[in-house]
Image (cartoon, rainbow, N blue to C red; front, side, top):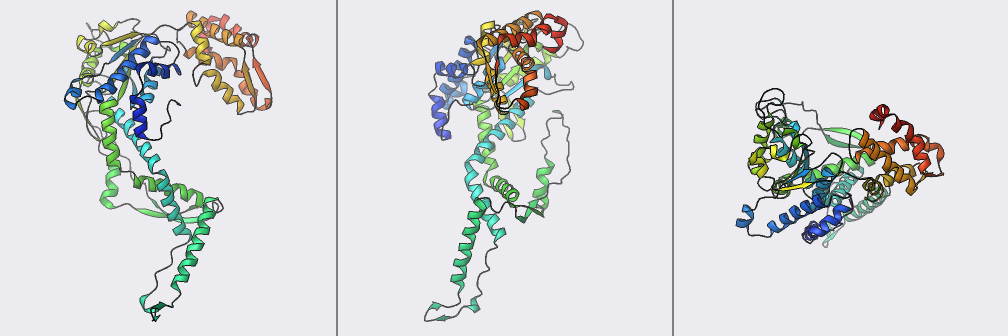
Amino acid sequence: MAIYLPSSAEEERLALDELTPREIVVELDKHVIGQKDAKRAVAIALRNRMRRQKLSPELAEEIIPKNIIMIGPTGVGKTEIARRLAKLANSPFLKVEASKFTEVGYVGRDVESMVRDLVEIAIDNVREEKLEDVADKAELNAEERLLDILLPPSPPPRPEAASTSGGVVIDGSTALTESSSRTREKLRQQLREGKLDDRTVEIDVRERNFPSFEILTNQGVEEMDVNIKDMLPNIFGQRTKKRKMKVNEAFEYLIQEEEQRLVDMDQVTRIAIDRVENSGIVFLDEIDKIAGREGGHGPDVSREGVQRDILPIVEGTTVNTRYGMVRTDHILFIAAGAFHVSKPSDLIPELQGRFPIRVELQSLTMEDFVRILTEPKSSLVKQYTALLETEGVKLEFTKEALDEIAHFAFRVNESTENIGARRLHTIMERVLDELSFDAPEKKGEHVTIDADYVRKMLTDIVKDQDLSRYIL
């Protein structure tokens, strides 16, 4: 996502601090069409997070996140707005479906697992950043280790072999060292030019044949804090074995080993937990599925129970993870739901109160469909054009063809289930089905998709409503 290309983490933070709500909306406009109100709401929420970080710690502690409920049908951009916001803010982001959770005591996912999953995502993100920071040093270290294997260093001269005359060394060890150094530099040059890639070397690799263990706790299957595989090497020492491989494979392996050695995982964990606590974003989808009070029993008996379990996480609590305790007081929660059957007021009052911002997303119009096809940075038209270009086929859509595709998508949404912009994916696949199949035989051709071609590919299916339910 080409929003900012800062040269350092400090510049990235500075660039983010300078983004006004209006500029945040402009960045979101590059990826999501329409939905002005929702973009304004998330832009204000993100800006408030930046404002909070500039306050004194005592006051900042008291300011709670402005959690948001997005109300709107599927496929109108709810998830995409939240995901793009997280990328823009460089924040740990997790999307979960509220309907996947069950009340404590029922079999299923425990609500605290969303925090544990968010921490794992943050750990991965920070580790990737640290690996980029040490990449050059790791490559140099791996290069030195590989050269030591290709040209083992000369043994130091024995003291008794050296004799002096008038303080001058006459054993020739200096000349030997210079010769070895020249040979090593020649090998280094050949290694960098790829001339040694097919040579075979023998290196020590770590054994990873520890058995797998699954530990069930009272917090559910996903909470397996005791990692036996990590403990065993520390107890018995890391076992290695000799393995022969090509120089280029050995180089890659040694780089990975050096990267792991250079990255301080304790520091990674500290940074990741801090990010989760101060800038984590959880997108809680399908929250309307757990709305509603139960007067009876049956499969939905735990709906209100799930709401009561989610409440402390949103209010602010401390969750135990394998990396330590994590506070949820300042994680931003963005909930979303279609609310066709239930309504936000059907949520328990305490949970409603924790989502002070409500925004309604509009259903997409035919004009929106045309814009979605062409305007976003990674629009469908750009994606399919780039895919077929790899086969040597130059693909072009006329404006009338795009209007027809949008028209068909809108009609099918109206006559069957309304799945919003997702319908464009199925329509485009159908339109380009034959061309995608025959593309390797059309190398060098220029193909123009016009309105007649779109109608030819889609009219029969759209006419037959029963068929369109299954194909489109």
